[in-house]
Each structure stands twice: as C-alpha cells, then as structure tokens.
Image (cartoon, rainbow, N blue to C red; front, side, top):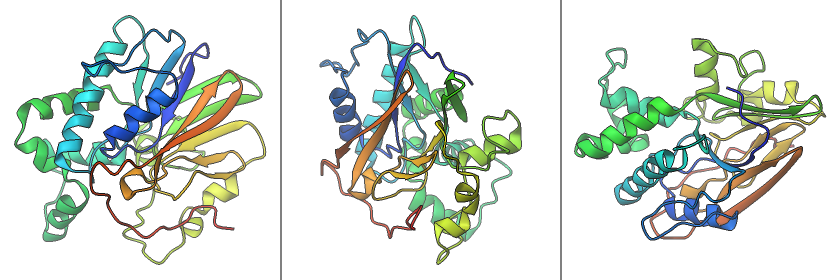
Length: 274
C-alpha cells in the first residue's frame, strides 16, 4: 500500500510491550502526549508507522498499556486523515490465530510450550475480553507492507520481516506471509543470519531505494547498502529505534530501555556480520 509523500514518517521498530520507550521516542521526535494518553496531532505533516510486533515478551501490565495506547491513538489520530499506520508482524499473526482457535494451528506439546514462551499476549487476551476486542480491531487495521515512493531516485519499502525482492510489496497470500515472517531462527539455531537469509546480501544494492524491516532483534541498527534492520531489541534491554522519512532524507533515532519492567534475554545472531 502506497503512502502519501507529503508526510514525514516516524517508523518505529519492534515495540514488544515497551510502551514507556515508545512514548519517549515519540516525544523525542516532536509529538506530545496529554494526561489522557492522547498523542497531540497538531503536527499536521507528521505520521507514525509501527513496524509490527507491538505485543508479546513484555509483562502483562505493559502489554495492556501498549494495546490500550495504540488502540486509543490509532482512532484518535486517524479521525480526519491517516496519521497512524500499523504493519502486521508475525507476533500479531500468531496471537490472532491462537485467540480465534484457528483450526489449521495444530496444538502439540511443543506448540503449547512455544505459546507460553513466545506469545504471552494470548493468556492476557483470553482473560480480558475488552483488550481482546481492541487487539482484534487493530489486527484488522494492520497491513503487511507500505511504500513511500518519493521519486525515481528515492523510495522506502516497509515490512515487518525481511524477504526476497520477488515477494516485496506484492499483494498475494504467499508474499504477505514472506513479509510477515522470515525463516525461523529458533528452528535454525547455530546458523548465522547472513547464511540463513543470504538473499539480503545477494540482493542488496548501492542505491536509495531502501527496504526497512524489523523482526530480527539486533543490538543496533544494521545496514548493508539499501537493506536496513531497525529492530534494536528494546524488550531485551537495549533500545527502541525509528527511521525518520522526510522528503528524500532518511534519518534514525533511538531511546534506551527505561528499566520499568524486566527485560527478556537472548543471544544475538548478528545480521550483516562482516
């Protein structure tokens, strides 16, 4: 889905319930948030895009705050014109399938273990019907890709997960799934990301037609030519980052983890580890 080039966009990487960091990052980039938790929309030419995976891994308290904040502001900011965009991540996809009892989702002991470990939003929504309703509405509003096509020399395609160019910004079921989730790191332990996702290096180009994605939880923003990962592992105690798209300029910003909840743990598999 193409987005207007007249806007400036704050594109935020994987939030994973880091609501304090999300608010701080927005304030750091010119927004204000009132006592009711509403984002000031007086910035007429500035919009927000969340790059997917705003749920899971955080505490239930912070996940509740995150869903309520996004829900409230999604409908607040989009009253007159589109100012808040949601990209669908693999965590939104899986939680949606769990809470609707998707018959194609085979429930095995291993699946139940993964549900508890990776998708803890499910148990929260199962006991909170109001929050569940809000999540389902936000899920329906999300989309697998957006593209900012400024001119023949500069464009930015946004997806949650990296994917081969043959699937990028295409509207069919296979392409949508490829843009939502790449090959599983948990099922390919011991394999370097640069090997597992070798197409990123092979297809990278020295031009200004960028592909920005999250999904891969890195210790910092990772860039190789026109391929950029901005998931900087906020929930793992590092930082929450954003890309800033303004006309034909691309900038970056971040805020550190604020230690207002317990961070998760992981071992990094570094992307573009040359």
